[in-house]
Length: 315
Image (cartoon, rainbow, N blue to C red; front, top):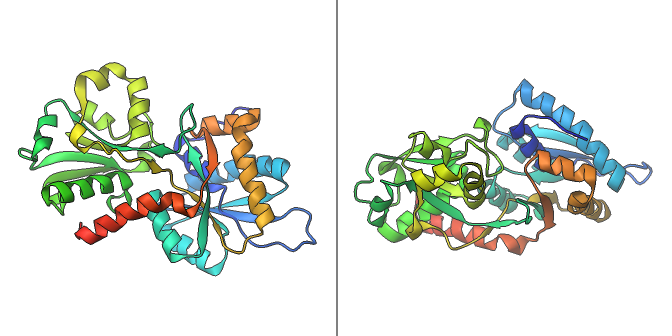
């Protein structure tokens, strides 16, 4: 079964089917849930893609797990209101920073997270990759003034950028990198959501749009496979700020109080997807290789980094 949807929609939606809806009475044979996903905005293209993917994934989950899932795209304010009102039971945010905000503000707990690559990894570093000429300036930031720094996502929600900001503050006392660098964020809608798409942050270095890129490790791994010559000849990993710490991928949450049996069924279906031909095809189309169980404590390193940011007074 081949699925041809826009890549961005697929990656978002493959996370989306986790948002669930209302507790259904035992009298109904098939429990029905509303799965909501955080999006930047509402538009007709996304709505149509969501409807198409709902048809595919809902059928798959119902056949494998006996649960019916309905998808709902929501902006951050609407998602927050929906969680508060109990209109969604499974929640996927917008990366690690937003996920930690949701986990702190609402009665939700993580249940699974996506894995990436053939080895189905869920833990990845964040890396600084620069042009060859710019790498030497990272020793002391001399010559960095006015340079162009690129990353994926919104500045306030980019976990990649957050890791760089904490490093800059702790190493050099720079608490506002925007005063030093011209920040050139790439929106996920430009073709990059799950790390590793052709036009991710590293691509900006190839076409001279940026001097430094702060990226998800999987983007570098994938870009190196796609364009090994360009990566080798035009870029350099900035060793001094290459994070040694791995961070787990953003989770899918379940709202407290949702039927535990149904939650376990959904988790089982997701984890078994790579072993099923149809499930594997859905995953491949979305650039996700699988899912793994997670618990709240798995995200403590992420929360610790955010706490360091807040303690340092970073802008």
